[in-house]
Length: 514
Image (cartoon, rainbow, N blue to C red; front, top):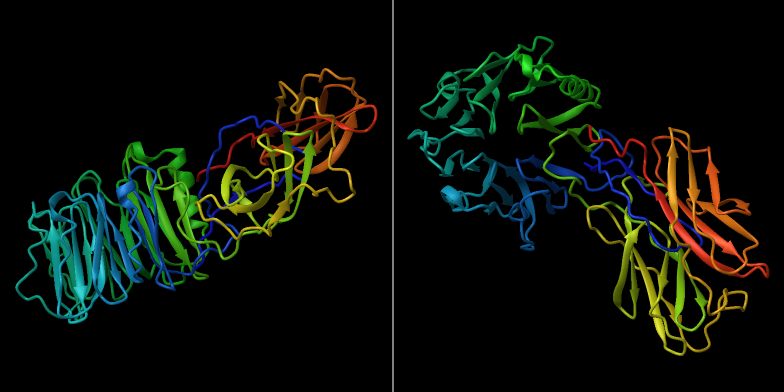
């Protein structure tokens, strides 16, 4: 199942100078062409998002808690589940590994004479099912949620909630262990094919799906609007809405019957969920202030995540292929400044900008957002260097290094002239400013260099737009949703480069988080 997220990356070809930093707005998108990993299982937690790909590789991302990122044990995995403060996974050997906060003994993993085949983690406890149909539970036991029934056999599925645990027998009988509602309501129901229990919300909510595809739910507080457009294969409710997965893969969602969740953002979120391509699995979580997050896997095995309180800016998963920088070249400005240029085909990548890492003699000397050049101010003529460049995806995955560009005493650029500006030239244009005028235009301003200037060449996203005699340029050929990178090159009367300047204009709306 390939992961997707929406990414807009731009490449600057040509000259660059000082970067004007602008805030970066991230997004997890409902769709996108970038295939990452074939997802075998995923987990949407309070503090992290995890996937297991079909090769058994486990990856997690988190915005807020580094302990929710597992260490690399070298193992491969088949299942993963995330709760409030901890996560657990099953290795392909059938053993359990847990990580996160050690509260309530939630990290004290059990052992079995049979390999474990399924796992469910909640706020403070977890349960696992082995190949012999027996369940083991551990962690917080404030409501009897780890007190597995004496008739511990013939289970085919398990599910944990904040205050209880449930299992389904092969006969379709639901069995729950908890002393609280609505777990007592689920217990002993017959003909059940799926149980979903709420995670971290006001009270508890439980939903069941029977063999006829009918959904029934019970909640500690408030009512749950019914779903009646089935049949369904899975249903889950939280403090915001009830969602059901229909047998044709479509999502059907209703907002909870509480006036304070009937906000426009939640209405829009519901519509976005129902507009997703056909899914085969999904999960939801209530976060805070009646917001929620949602992740689902579609029939093409892509992961989609929506919501304004997602626990990770970027989905985990390794892209199938990252662009490899090519055509490295070096412009030498005098005796101690040089500019490294390269190309990278980012046309197949959309969404948030990645970065480039520049290595000199094997040591990383620079990392910057998607501008295809590096100004080396520590360059020394007569010293040998080897430059390489790698592209880095937003999730931190580094692509293949470019071919090496060796530089020594005899180095010269293609064309024979390795000094492209006078030794005492101003390297950077000062005070480059971007003024945005509505959705379709902006203006660039900069200060003139001290030396006489014949013209200024204006590049946008690496393409030469025009030349202008004065220190400003008006661009009315843009739109509100794209980000732009500009390079201004000051040309002297003899055609040499006096100075360069660099500016970045973000999308007017930023990259939207659904």
